Image (cartoon, rainbow, N blue to C red; front, side):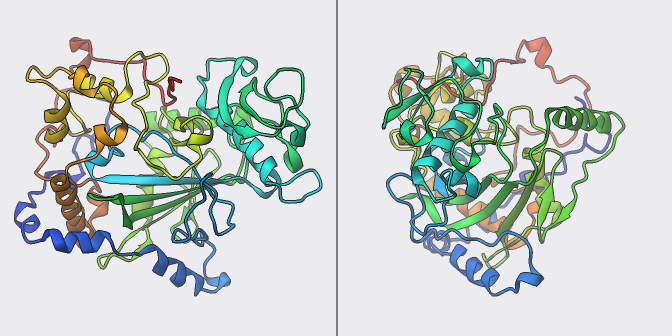
Length: 450
């Protein structure tokens, strides 16, 4: 283990609290009413009432109640676009108590034609270019990329994007990555696996509703913006600096504040809202914001510090509000077996804490092996949705954390004290090398089988 002396003690105390007695006091009717309550609308109203001079952070500008059209565009005209993606393994599987959605918005120039006029056609093309840049194996050369995309109009862009030597009004695949974006952003170079400055993401984390899958109530609302597009040398320097700081025992530090969000070394500014003890969405504290920064700053698994877009469902089907129904268990690139099956096989469990007995019972046989026959052909909703009983129990467990406002001690809801998580590290060896259990073939991107 490469932990500091402080890090060898597990400070995520909420994992080890026995809340069984408190859980028994919350009825199913109470928790169902709780998760069906709207706390986003009141947040929008509260922030809108604050004077511009008094608050410079993100002002929620997406009307979730108005929803999205069949192509994922926000009906309210805010230019947010929802996309469907495969949830990151473990914590974001609904079987473990949370589900979510993600929206993207490109800067104005990427939504306009060469004359500065709003153009949905240009917006689609630039999103398709970005999709191809992020979702294909980064080992594939730019010129060799092939990616299924929604129908886009090459004649509007004036660029042959599918490599057939002509301009067509409706192509559904990109062959090769263009050098630049199109429209008013035609001077902006396409940089593989890097977002242009000004890109925004909106991410809501929800309870799991046993009936609809996604609760009305939000656990968290997370906003991020690429405020600076760094040169390659600056990105490499940031990684080197992070490694040096670790060697010297320095703790991470991020400029900013909860009022505007915290900024990492890679040009991203992140701001989060979380429930207060009454269920209203409030700004996260600086310490609570560090949970966001930890995942979106220096994890090697991300692409430009993000998780969702590289895992987008290909083509038009991927431009829609998140829905796991009908979504296949696509394998990671380089793998033959579905990602869920591989996770279950390697971890012997359905979550990071190896405490999800329901998923183990559902998809592992008596010998602990993956029941491939049972999993074959099942969509992600079937594979990963919890039973009604588990969904409500996890919602109750999280509600207790909300009432305590103890997020700094861990946000993961557990139904019993974690038995497979270390409280203290004393042995310097993880035992993984000796067991031959170190894996180096994991990728964020997926191989979507046609």
